[in-house]
Image (cartoon, rainbow, N blue to C red; front, side, top):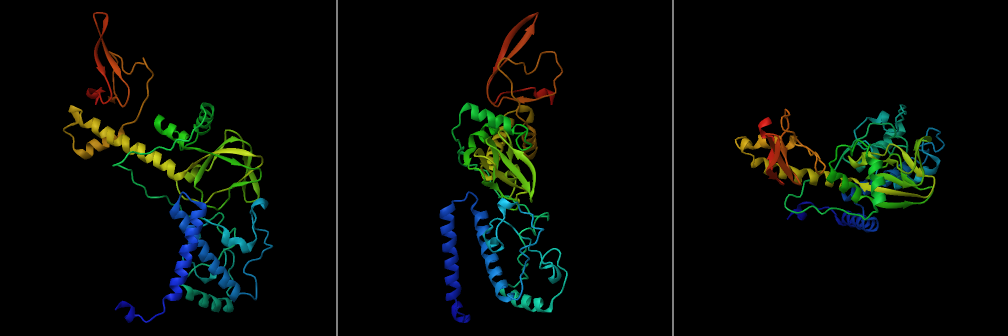
Length: 374
């Protein structure tokens, strides 16, 4: 009934739809990306750019859309690509806010051309909304760009399977030293820190390889095990990296265009950590600990009268502290201001009477003390 009410020919559109999905499937199988949603987004953005470019070439053959000799192109020479290969650049997200025809051809083009307007009207038939013209390769440089991150939920009903990639003790220690001063890792607890080190995979990169390229959307954070790399913003070299260095940490937080291009200047070995794994480590460990803390707090007599949301707030306020074997946690006679729950390990309680110190209790996982200080 519905098909009879709409006497249109759907076969060509269906063929194009099937062809697009087949091409997407083939590329996905070939590349096996970690971020499936981002990969699909990049694919369709690239196909749309190809369609725009083809249409522009057909309707604007009387002049060039962009000056290929423009000296304002600030790509590093090793990263330069011919303009016709622009459609192959994946992961670049263009702003789609309607800007008006006077600004559609680039950030500095203010001239109105009646012939251009006629062609734009024809071009706009491809969509129900105005689409921006294909910008030059450096059009997005320095502009405000959107960032995003995957929506993730902890696996409450199943055990988190940790990623463990074998490393020597020396390699693990070098990674720890490299990331110790990085702002993303400073507040990780001991378990999260170990999970991050275990999850890093080795990447061997030949000399002259572009590891990350300015403007591309990044997924990986890198630690340099050996070798040397140069960092460029546009054509300008701004710094270099060697063994012990690290770069790309913003990719662990969200999908943001890379701020610089980094190229190896010698054969290099890198350790790589992807965003999904990093966020999963943080989320799963945090979620697991929160559930554990809430359970421990529910056993504290002093806190049983609290509402559920109040216990949740206390659970969120708890933080892990570590003590060596034999180290004093609290000392008899001192003024205390801390409440403790034993997350792992054991402790003994010693009390001094008449100059004699005796053990009066032994505590284990889930035991607590110092609650009266609250």
